[in-house]
Image 1 (tube, rainbow over the protein chains, first blue to last red):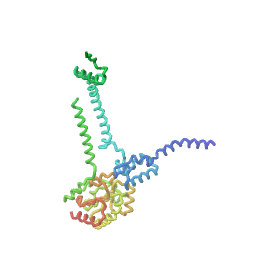
Image 2: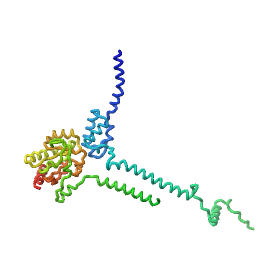
Image 3: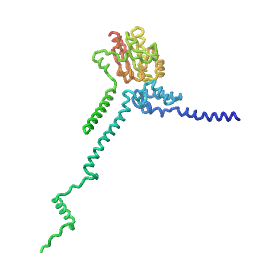
Image 4: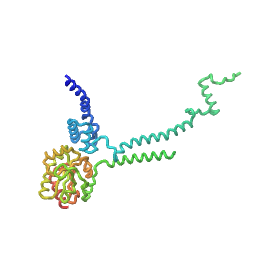
Length: 164
Length: 185
């Protein structure tokens, strides 16, 4: 009885390790987006060519063998070189892939930081409360406006002197 | 400060344009060897001193083309996944037997972005007796302007290119003529 309990306990203890081992095994769906078709220059996921078929078949062999994603990728790099990986290594000219987007974003932020205060200062100078100040009418224009309005609103019209 | 903004923008734009230009100009296969041949010259074969991993019959873990200097070398880029490569393999093997019998040189196969096990299996099934090397990532073939296979380059004794077949060799006579030309120069 004691032995059976001990075996059961041991099995229970080993269960997470076994589960982890199973978890580490990779799948075709997990690997394909991370790999390029080396002759077509497009992701293996969408490549249709004899070479792509050979590459997929090789990956399937590695998966069937129980390799993890890292092991599959290492094996692919050994066969085809680092260009087989969709994400290029951060070395040499490939560094531009990582540096250029960061530099572009930083440059745009710097440009905004430089220009925004200037735009805001210009706007404040134009109007302290943010709205364009009304331009006062000249006496002639004011008189003409009054006359025009009076044509539509008789009440605004000044009372005419009565004729005798 | 007001003048610095446009200058920075211009420098930045120029850098991006230069990067784009670099990317565009480094794309595509070089045709320098073909142009030299068309102009009547026999250009030096590229990468002849660069070692490549050996698949079979080259006597060592790595080999370079210079080790066959002094004879004609028929360099054939191929892969196990390439049906035209399989189709031309008997022609190359026939050329190899003639070259060996005449002590005139060798065919050297170079697999292009291929899996070792698949290449070895093809060598066996095609019955290839000539040495085969591995171009793992295609950078060796790029020196020859090769980005499609099969392609074949016939080199003379001084390791200069005398004939190029970009595509499958369909006529044994082309190969024979090219080897005679390589022996003559």
